[in-house]
Image (cartoon, rainbow, N blue to C red; front, side, top):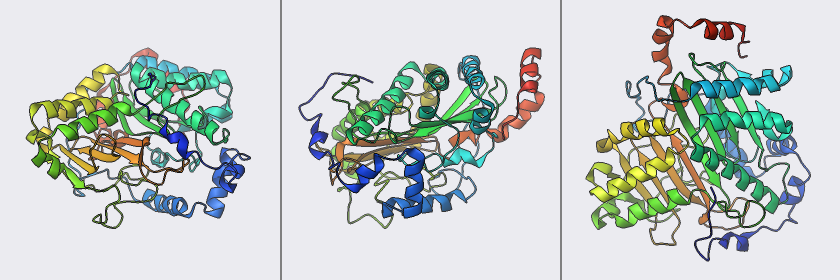
Length: 439
């Protein structure tokens, strides 16, 4: 997503460029992604991230339950329905990509629809779970065919946003002189199940600051969980100069908080400081900082906080809707409209909360949460840049579908009966019978 500069502080991040003579960067510059990840796993540096990685491995041992507000999954929230997804085009793009791969690449790409590997995506630059096909390790035609799956699946504006996130990652890699680890194509694509217009299947596309998980069944798509971030969130030099992302989510969130009546502001602001002494242990950690539902947090219990959307005046409810529309941008338009209407049907159970100040220049966190959706926005301190405190040029955003909605899990039990009653047409039946099952 590109645009002209809007303020004199947009390139503020440049005062925080790191010292590239430090061992962290000189070593990183000599390694490829796998060497970099292996060294991290063996040596445990940085210790705080390695400890988080070990914790993630423990979380993965838990059976999938889903994000909840109280530990109890509410059933019956997500109907099987036709959302107008262009499933034929998505399947065609995926089958074309498969035709471009070698047998070894196809085998590496493909997993069973119920594989636990669905849950092993992550957003750091470390290739912690090495599966699927990595875009920077294949030929340009193969890479383009894999990106065509994303393009067919997402809305045009959603695809532009994903490409912008990838380009910003490449820009960061050039800033720290480590393009083998962070580049525009340092992302893995994984398929789950066989691409089909009638049977459930999906994909995971993940790497630094961009992780998308898509589950398909006929004309329905669950794009959840996803993670999108940027450090910095703009490109100010080179061929992609002017590219920016996540400023819409930022501006709308701040506009909502600033425009709330004072009494609602006070209730929405659950902590005044970004790292507040009043926070309980675990509410802040070095990697996730304030956001709660990132990688491996599939079973997180996140109590409701803040103010109910139904208590907001009409203009503020409209802003809340605009924020949610931004978070649903990846979905094709009809699916986005259906999903947004579904979420709006539960405004009496939709909460908005805030951490930090809400002046024009304050960094902040916010969350919108209901039984049907959970989105988070967080300004971070530096990971590659050396700003010690949260800044507006390093942003993390994410979306979860609570109550077992992630990865289409809530829909899957409902599909068994549908599939038993459905009679495939001859062409689809022939295509499916010839396809090799995922491993």
